[in-house]
Length: 215
Image 1 (cartoon, rainbow, N blue to C red):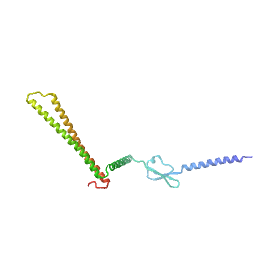
Image 2: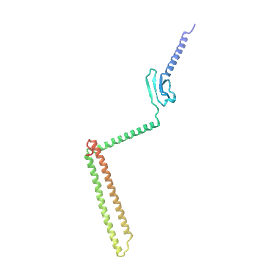
Image 3: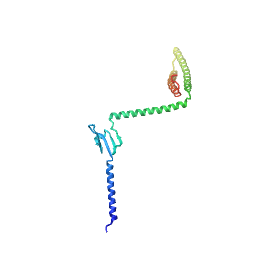
Image 4: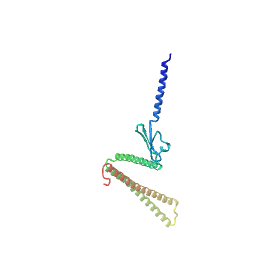
């Protein structure tokens, strides 16, 4: 007597294998590719030849729906233009971020444009005071030098000998005078920089508060 359960089991396995093969074979051609050949003719095929891939292609489902559009490869010039545009965009974004931070700092420092003017004038008065003090020091050094030079002239007229210590004192005074002059010039330069910086801040604060920067 034949074993029907064994035959049924074998038939089931064969049926499952056939179904799997059908599914695989259908999956292999589940997509179509549309591209143009060297003659400019649109081709619909199950694959894209390698030489046409760089020109771009479209992936379609079997019922004609667009699954994906693969763009053509960029030329060297286009890549450079793209990279340049990206770099410019990044730089613009960086400037905007820095400006935002700078604006936030200005608004924390100054409640009104008048606050900028007061801060500027306070700073400038402080520097002017330093310059006036140094000018006074410079005048005293000049007076000391003149006195020493006059005493040396008297010694020469009387036929005396000028000692090295007196000459060293004059050189020391001259070095002090040069340093004071450098300090004064440095403060004048600082004042010019501050005027420009505060002018920029004042214009920006007026703009942030909706006032006319040219006012």
